[in-house]
Image (cartoon, rainbow, N blue to C red; front, top):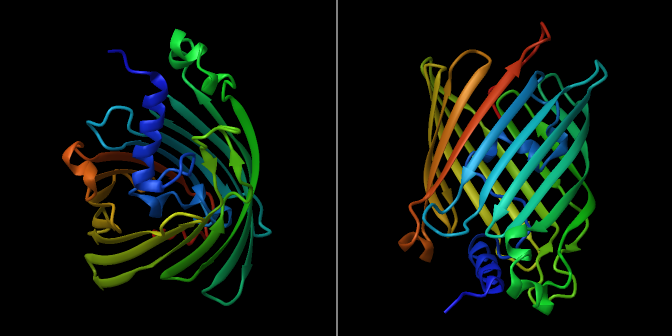
Length: 306
């Protein structure tokens, strides 16, 4: 008996729902503390360097059609007047579904004290949603009323955020997309871009000259879905190697690491093991990250805080 491709799509959406409850939400990352720009535009330029990042995530290895995500960004201060700017791109694939996001970010920073500054950010961009030609060209699909609309759309959106940081701590609040979009328009199996609210924060505590601890957290809230909470504890050894443990409430546990290859270049890796029913079918999730920081200010604070 031949499987109807429509059922594959529906099942894929159900699998994603185990993690995010709705399709077409921003992807989740183990190394969320290093790519805050994806959700919070006020983060743009905060590192006072030209920050370039590339990430690849393969989720739920062993599950057919599981999410595969690529993320790339660049952001930096763009003037001496406390203005920062950035650009980020996400490509996310789930089964036969493809989602791409491209957003520009602009931030403005106010120094509130000698050690504290407050940034406001605006995010503007668009997302593209489509289905693979392999599916759409299938004879069974062409004759299926469910796919009469080819589900190939660009959706414009805007977002905003605030970011407060000191010498050893930070806190951010952001809404990366203000508009809801229904990609499967008028479909029984609606795939929605819903409004997400993010809160993230962390601090650094220097235990000794060779050991620094960095707890971080990320809270995501979506209307109609359970609150998602990530908590991570990282330890910096000899100012070169980060090692840490991460936990996502009722979803996954994992380990992360980051190694400074040079003062500018770092390599990160993360592994997650699902604590849901998927654990019996998946070999876990893998994530690799490359970051490159170009210092161009002699008075750069260039914190390794976030």
